[in-house]
Length: 252
Image (tube, rainbow, N blue to C red):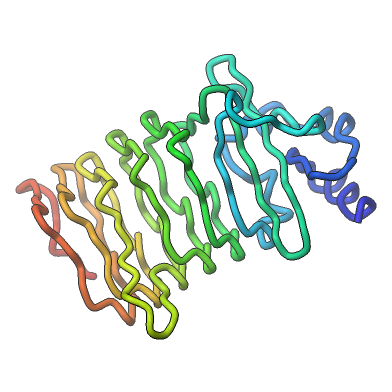
């Protein structure tokens, strides 16, 4: 296993760290400066994106990072570290910063293609207040059944395009269980220019909440918002509003 992990680190320049003894000095030296900042992208996690089953954000002031964890970025001078705990078929990616983790303004494609990702715990330690792009953020996370975005501050986000596109398990429920309502009401879209294909291909989705959404003056594209949501029965739109210049009637 160590040999395989070392190969991944050498060939693909992974900057995550595993809960096993793997030397990281040479891998870190090879990393381009731009890829050391975690919140630019999670491209460095991509070699294992189809194996990671959980992502946990944490506060380094409250958790202890393993001795061999790697610094993957700095948030206003404070360290952001990442490591992976792997056991059998479970791989948990931990991302922790001193006082929490601030996502970069460009946070598009953050977890795109993490096909086995079942759960993301933001733990109220993630700061999204400066983010302006969340397009493709969870695109293709086909094992993700629900997500809690209640801690998100998206007041500056302008691009939500394809945010949950092809999340085919989103809203999935086992037979006999109550409907799994996906709540997106915490997202502020008043500054958005596009929300196109945001939920396209979410074939398990039956109910979704977009309460209090406001379609602002700059919104020009919401095409295929619910396209191929073949099981969607209910959209809760309590207190939804729109500006006269927005285009809330584009094709669904």
